[in-house]
Image 1 (tube, rainbow, N blue to C red):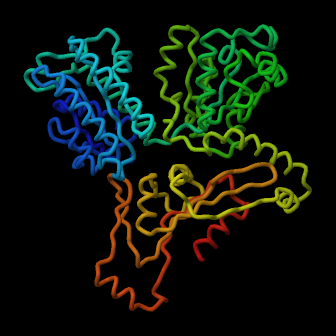
Image 2 (tube, rainbow, N blue to C red; image 1 turned 90 degrees about the horizontal axis):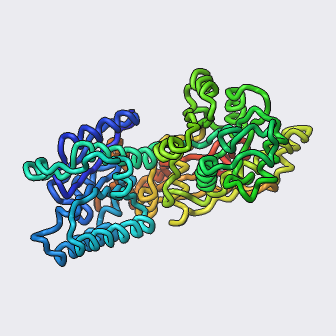
Image 3 (cartoon, rainbow, N blue to C red; image 1 turned 135 degrees about the horizontal axis):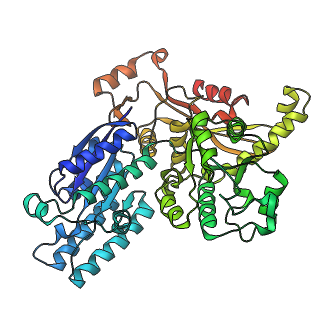
Length: 512
């Protein structure tokens, strides 16, 4: 299990029901650790002067807005709400090594129209701040959607223990938090293999023709979701027992009606072979593991076979009933889009780059020798200092590269910025050739051994920086230059670039 710590602060009492529910979800996701709890109603202080938040891998703020309503004074309430927004925008929490902040705002029963308006205005400002500042929020509407008609409040618990919510609402808050934790801390699905007939459209295209397949709302709903995922870097692939010409014709003659376009499709396996063979071939073509795949199909027998033969693939049975389909799709974590703040330029261009890789594969097949193929590519490698705009992508490389990652240590965007501020050297490595641009595919982080040292925090994650004392600095100044060493802390490269000479360029960079 991966070990994490959650820093938790709330405007109400953090009950045992809430703690047990959060712990349950962490274990289900293969995460162990504990909760670092702030004192009662110390949410704003934690944002300005972190204590529990200082130790969290991820931090959580839980709000029941009426808790800040003192003697029904709207002016005092407005001041407290604005102070929270100020803390979110400029508080010290932003400089912590934690990998994110989740703000959960529970529903309320307040009927005073002035107070209602203050609460609604606060939610609008909070959402805008989340979009611009890179934290995540769960608002009352989302909680209500999953609660349905169940009671959200517990008046007895509020009076006795300052816990305003029912056990069902606390469990719902925990589940919504778990979904954010899943999206923030766990590796996303890299590729989705999706069936075509009765999944992307209605009817069998081989029987009715491309012009007659049905594009009802439930099919378009799934197409819109897949298109959004493709635009954020997920590789959407077709895996269908059809003739390729028939499937391709649907994307052509029904293009204006389709939400999923052909340029969203990274790869395909369309023939009469078993879909398990297709998923294996797609994984080989894309050079990613089967455990990075999800599979979507309306046929329960196809889903069962994939689950049995390829248990590492995450399989989702697409329901036929339109009402059930919408509900289950909203609840399907595997279809969650990555947070906008975490999407990089490389993510948005990933589908195009894999399509370019197909062209490289075709060139390889027509080349007489490997040397001839490599020469035809016209490879260009660029190693240069990284800037603030690059840290998101470099953080991704430290987390997602497995085959060519020397230290297997994750560094957040904040870690990289602090590393540079302390004098560390960060180099980004880019690759392009005659077929296209790979983008940033490598990162090297290195430092002079006499400038500072780092400690890896295994529990909370991230780096801690230690600088030498004044006596150590004087000793270092008098030391022989031969004592100087370059310490490489991160050395990672995308497996897509292996065999192109990039690793040699990265080693040369470190040596210089």
